[in-house]
Amino acid sequence: MSQPTPEAPYDSGYDAPEPSGPIRIVLVDDQELLRTGFRMVLNSQPDMAVVGEAGDGQAALDLMRTLEADVVLMDVRMPRLDGVAATRELVVRGERPRVLMLTTFDLDEYAFAALKAGASGFLLKDVPPPDLLAAIRAVHSGEAVVAPSTTRRLLDKFAPLLPSESEPAPPELTVLTDREHEVLLLVAQGMSNAEIASKLFLSEATVKTHVGRILMKLGLRDRVQAVVLAYETGLVKARGR
Image (tube, rainbow, N blue to C red):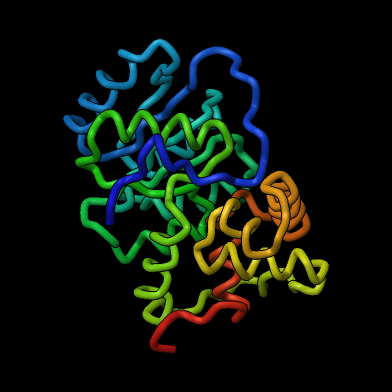
């Protein structure tokens, strides 16, 4: 899996917010040396500031009650409370920060669970600094880091292997118009806004509007979550099912 690049951001369907001060970042990882390295890279940027650190998921949740952050870099495997559970709790709380999950191995089996929990994407821990910075800026501006095609490959590989969770059923897709249903299907198939616009003979602006309405109606944070929902509802089937 290739890392996200600045040239190909993943459009969430929403307009980016106006910049207002540096991006406030919280580092959550049980390896202090890794946090130190990330902190040095991030604090060297004029538009970024590390405002807090934690060594496990529970400590991160406690910390987030005492400060405001925009982006959380969250490790997956940690003591006491793992990153997936911590991310899920942040989403339940309605906290503002967007979560970038950190994984050690490409296509870690926890990545799907992280996206389902509410993470806006995932990165390898050995991500090159330029890609790390681009990913943080993309997430802060309302985009998602994982490209649609990468998300689909991940879901195709891991969705059949994951046990179903005891949680409420996803929202019914009947709340969508026929056109929105059509757009969601194409998003789930890994198409960009430009590709969807070309296929449906629409403008990119119109497609972006449709995507934004889909996210609003289904109560989703970004397009990654829309792809996950499309698989869960059977709109798109993972290969091998």
